[in-house]
Length: 124
Image: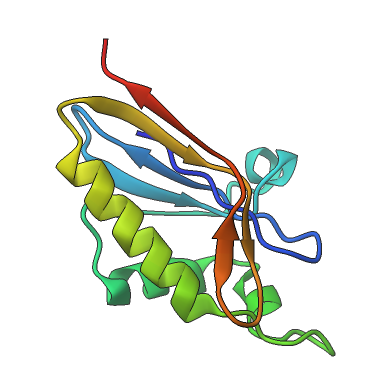
């Protein structure tokens, strides 16, 4: 199952949930074509706890951009970790009927985030 997220000010985060044989949770680094170039990813088994989700977010090489790099304000990474945690639980709960969840973009601000678009693909 796939889950994809984006962050404001040109920051994209892409999170993918793989269900089925792997049943893992993959949090890609910042989205767009940069994910393919940088391979900045974090992977763990679903469902993830809030603490695991935060550790995944902070393990990304570009995580300092989320934490107030230079004069940019810090973004609400706790809210993002909550979202990753909840999406991983949803993916786990729906693993028999859903093969992919794609949330892209997910716009993260200084006080929460917003899923702008989402795609859920059912099993065949």
